[in-house]
Image (tube, helix red, strand yellow):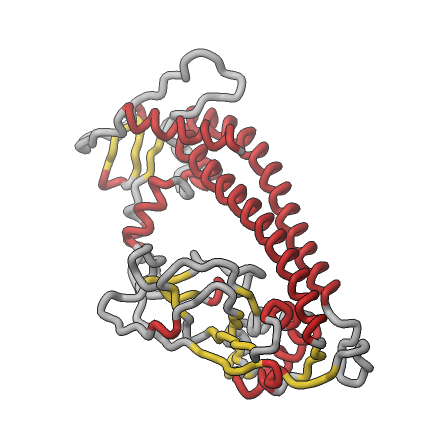
Length: 368
């Protein structure tokens, strides 16, 4: 790197701008694991103003991002609080006994998970795109749809148009889904689907648990998230590598569980649903704010590294930003004063585009 023309901190921010990230994504090659060749990496073009302008931009960015970081930390604390609230609700609704050697509450009895499950349904592997499914396409859920405490329908992959789909595997509201293969921390994760978009399918790493007719599905879903059952699943999981474990259907059915009487199941199920819906609404709100915070960070960085952001205390018109020209062979967008000549320049962004990006950054900041 040339410190006489490129500030290291400026490069760090520049590397995360949309302008640079789009070039990187377009140049990456490979399937599930994409990579960049060193030669290709060296051809990424960077907008490069004079060093003094870079320092001015960094001064603005430090203050703006410092304020954004404080908000981001508050959002992370809020997300942790939602998780603690969900866990507290789960523990409050669990039976007081934690092992088969303990005497269950009056009316309860010890049995096996297979005693309350009518049958298990597994998805199958399908040919998919890397992107999520559109509304008119079939999609297959990813394991991340089941491992965040609430069902996330957006965590899916689009099924290729020529692939045959078994509509029996479509996910429905009320389904109890279990992640049968994942890391030790996430194998056996359970969610109950509150709402689900049409044309979304089980994957080969998911199971649908269909309870017996006299079993309350809401109670069963809550029971499967208790620390005792989670520990049983972890003990019974197997795998050739530590990072990917599996739980078989037979092992699931054999797990000892405390079974509540029907009336108690309904009461606990209703309470569990109320708590789950409340924490899910909070989770969605916090996640939306976090996403907007990340969009604002990108918009601010994009605007700053393109000379379209003024200081917090500046008034009037922004300071004049000198025109930048593209020098393809150098893979840098540089100011004319850098002293390199003989390269054909390319037309820069239009005024309309600059205004659009600046408005986006300001709107996001106001909303947050």
